Image (cartoon, rainbow, N blue to C red; front, side):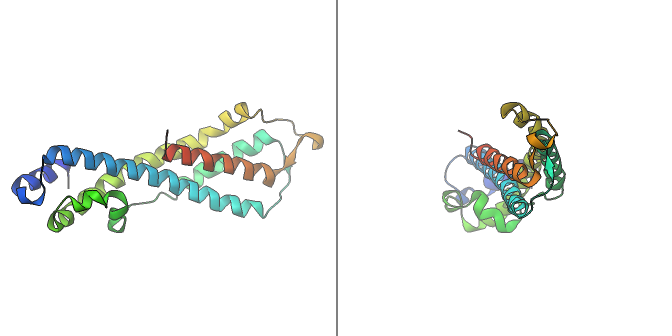
Length: 182
């Protein structure tokens, strides 16, 4: 269902909602998009958090900090590409429930569910693509910002697992900051 179809439905059913349907649908669409973006970033955070907990259990060989940052970010981007969440009808209340749901009749709500899911799927897909690209490129910024070493001798390297969990925790924080920008 497209936006225009939603507006046409409201025009045919004026008793389903009080007010200007165009303004209502615009605000609703913005809210669904925002919730879908947040959900995508938080799903990525959850994935990285789970992976970080797995990484904490392994020590690994010694490696330069910069090498670990590049490898972790690249590998996570690869994995995230294959773990894109897809909103379903069960997610509708999270995406557009509450006051918005109470503003329309139950019949209107049932008609709008496919549109809400469609808007959310498109937004989450676009956001997930951004998350994957961000994750893949983030290593360069982390190396520069945290002055990560490229030295590979034993005295200047750290355990791979230690650096990997630290990088993953930085990514988790980044993902939350993207989900809820200030």
